[in-house]
Length: 475
Ligand code: GLC
Image (cartoon, rainbow, N blue to C red; front, side):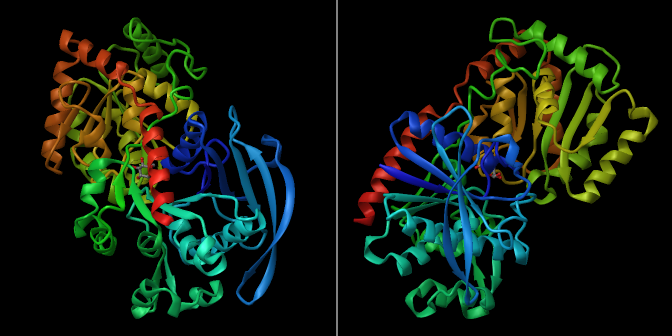
């Protein structure tokens, strides 16, 4: 089985968010199961050429906006694997992205329209050898339509994975002309264009041979309009072709026993001493007083709509009344960045609160390894990877009971969850965790968290089965 995994980012080569982690790890796990997967991404200029051995293979021609454009095809591998990564280079259309792949601003949408065209030209230039194209998020929403037009009956099967429905990639009729899609050929496109607006996620969800999302609970939630909007309509009509498969994490990449970013490495037996030693080091690093109080953290894109920053903000002063320390690492929304930074300057919080705006993988690992409690009050969460990483590093998550958080955190067993999305419910859950800290029950919960298996092994098998099914459906 030969699969092409089309995506906007692939860690560690280019990572903007959780999507990059999935693209960097699922293909590796599939390769171990004997699936031959290539990953295809745009060659953004922020991918530094020196960092990986990137070799130029060929040049293809991509028609777009009434002209033909050269696209150079480069190849590298996901480090530590045999998975090929194909990078498509075009200075004008593809080089500028990769900074915030979630934004659906107009030029971002045009970039991915061009990328979709280029992917299809690449498939043609590769003699149509792929059995299935695994498309990811709105960035790849036009690939099925284009394959229908360019390859016809012989086209490979397509699967679209929805990683986050909040970003759909919208643009105007103008763009459809630039892509040169034949509107009468696609009924869904005609319908979508009634308001002179094209929605990439909708096109992908309606046209792919099958659709899935990144956790079973989010798959259920997506059927309701308040979460999925217009996409819910489409998905309700696709029963039997819509699935939920839980993401995994790369256990060899996130491994507290071998992680070079932390000084005191640990496993299930010696977690406690190591965590305290790491905590003391990190307290010094962040200029917090060295003391053995519950260490609470949050690491996230600061996306106020999705990540529950409003809940955090409304309860933060109450949380800080408890005898604990709180550390936040993240970047994103400017308003929240400023409010948080200002709060950390208030004198009475100097010894309790540390805000690091930005993203630093090493610091993230040191925070996971030092934390006792990890907060994830997301309003919605398709899957979420941080709660799994936190548990792998022995930090108990406090989560809103939705989506992938619901599917990975067991209240009172390896974490804490709250059902109602309100500051009070969140504060009560944090207080529950705070009060248990240091008890025998706490230690048992940390052990449960550490023993969880969040690796890809199970989910990669599910993807392999799904691939087979989708290829059959296509025939
Ligand atoms: C998006 C979602 C997140 C998910 C990730 C990978 O970032 O918001 O929940 O874990 O994609 O699928």
